[in-house]
Image (tube, rainbow, N blue to C red):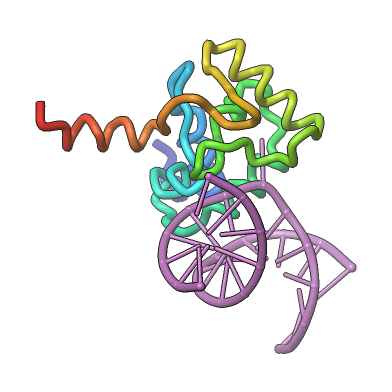
Length: 114
DNA sequence: CTGATGACGGCGC
DNA sequence: TGCGCCGCCATCA
């Protein structure tokens, strides 16, 4: 590697965490920030997504911690996100994703009584 | 430098 | 269950 290698910026780590979301899976802003090594920066994740211009970025898999679409109901972004989630087989009810967040799923699996 | 804003989160009532 | 307030942090006016 180049000797001038610099540490990844917070923005890059956040984008990487979003790209790491598997198809048909969703996560909250706080969860993404946490995975990026930036606990408490949920708002920073939101700002990055709002300024991102990468068509390959699965931003539609990022929701609020309660599983709701972050955009105002009825807005173009709101409809677009639901449209994309539906395309991945994720069911959405009145702006609410009908499935547990990725982090909750992993946590539930870990704590499951088996 | 100070104050306001935002694709948020958590807790209290 | 729903609503409101406060906390966190980076960016903007």
